[in-house]
Picture: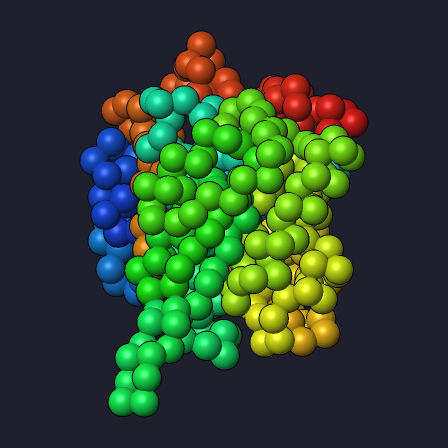
Amino acid sequence: MPLQIGVPAETVPGERRLAVVPDVVKKFLGLGAQVVMEPGAGQPAHFRDESFADVTFATGAEIYAQADVVLCVQPPKTTQIKTMKPGSVLIGLLQPWSDAKRAKLLLDKQITAFALELVPRISRAQSMDALSSQAAVAGYECALIAADHSPKFFPMLTYAAGTIRPSKVLVIGAGVAGLQAIATARRIGATVEAYDVRPETREQIESLGAKFVDTGVAAAGSGGYARELTDAERAQQAERLAKAVAQCDALITTAAIPGKKAPRIITADMLARMKPGAVVVDLAAETGGNVEGTVAGEKTWVGEVLVIGPTHIASRMPVHASEMYAKNLFNFISPFIKDGALTLDWEDEVIAGACLAHAGEIRHAGVKQVLGL
């Protein structure tokens, strides 16, 4: 029997992405694998069933019970994991730090689980980096959301009676999402300032035509992420950042620390000093928010400032988000599929680093510590 790769429909409300697209399915079939999909799974992402040639269709329950490898976007429900066959493989954005109960169930069922959030940030793994690909979508969308809700033009506009100055946008966090937000806001015509606690981002920010906001706080961490700030650093950061926040027309925040609550950067006092009608888009809303007053999934007026906490933001652009994500998944697992069989190389740095669970134990030390397992 060839390796059976299962793709069930996503069940989390608001999730519209798909773990495979037609081109990627062809590549899996070319490796000798069989692909089994749930009918209609691609509909939210605008992929019709008939666009998936040579795919076998089955119910979600049948896929979870029979597939050797299950590809997903969001983590499956516990009821779905319970039906998976022992020894099968689960791959997706599994939110590894968020749910000890789900992690224990993976161990009980002897599931081998790979969380794409854990893929090592090394050169060889860039084509597998789903966090970066989806962050690019999110950053782009954040700039569009800000422009759409702003009471002002983003670009400079000259008309018969005079000239309207371009809006000023401030982006906090210059990871992939932040840099994409900067680039998109600049394309729309806004003037952009940006801030990140990692000093090495200054050159990247300025290369996109934005001005770097220097607060005098540097907090470079490991793996390309920022470390948590000390209380003294937070105070200094807040004091110098408040001035830039007060002057902007739109604020986009993208700061995150893997496995931890999003750092609170923008206080109610800062919001109170912003211009009437200013817009804030908090990309970190799902993990607690960078902004005091953010409500995940809601638009909230805090005084005269509109604070938006979008959720499932990459799903707002499901076609390209799915294409990017599906290629990340394929690049991750395809090197280990030969002649229709899966052979995992546990000496491989990427496989070992991305493994959440295998053979009844949590394999990632950081996750084990956070979950207390």
